[in-house]
Each structure stands twice: as structure tokens, then as C-alpha cells.
Length: 165
Image 1 (cartoon, rainbow, N blue to C red):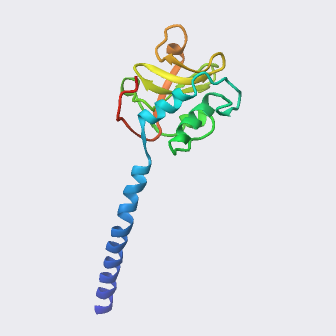
Image 2 (cartoon, helix red, strand yellow):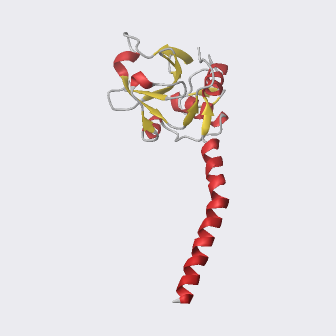
């Protein structure tokens, strides 16, 4: 009995020691997953006008998901390569609750997710379109994007620290 009691005390002590060591590290990991919305928006705007290149992932040319991946990678966040795979990650966000840095998704082909962009605030999103390259469009554009919108995802903890206008 006494041996079992001592073993239980020892396990409790080890558990407490692990929590004291690992607990602060877990908080650091959470902090590392936070991304500054202004940084995302500024990075997106810094490559405005970059031409559209199918499969492009660099400032020499982007497709829509390559653009998103580039912007997020500059903030230390890795995302899946395609817009459809990006749509499978993160947490769904209602359109009325969008924050700068959220990913917005569209069906432009009639076959599910086929385009994506980064919400930058004020009802606008940055994206790489095949016709204009990296540009900014209105999310509720009644002529095109408004009817193609299918949803949004928050893929990381985005810290809102400044206006994204």
C-alpha cells in the first residue's frame, strides 16, 4: 500500500513539473499562431499589380492560392497550396463577422471552390485574378463577385491592431 501511495505521489509531482515546463511553451505556440492583420494587408498591397500566372507562388506571378500562400508565409503561416484545400481548413466565418485577414472563397467555375482572396476590410478583398493580376475587389460586387461568394474561413488567430483601410 505504501509503495502505491509513493508511486502516486511521484506521478503527481512529475505531472506538475511537466505542466510547469510545458504550460508556458504552449502559450508561446499560441502567441506564435497570431498574425497581425495590418501586416497581412500591407503584404498583400505590396504586390498589387503582380501579373497572374497559373500555378504562380512568387512575386514574379501568382494564381489566387499562390498569392494567399505568399502573403501568409510572410507572416510565418503555412497554408495548403490550393484554394479548395484552403477552404477545408480553418473555422467558418459569417460574412457579417469578417475581419481583415480572413480568407474568402468563390465558385467561378460552377464546380465548387475555384477562387479565393484575403479580406482586407471595408467590404473589399485582395486577390490574384486571371484578368487583372493582384488587385482589390468589392466582396458584394453585384456584377460578379457578389453572386460567386460561397464562404469564408479564419485560418489563424488574426490580431486586429490597426485599421486596414
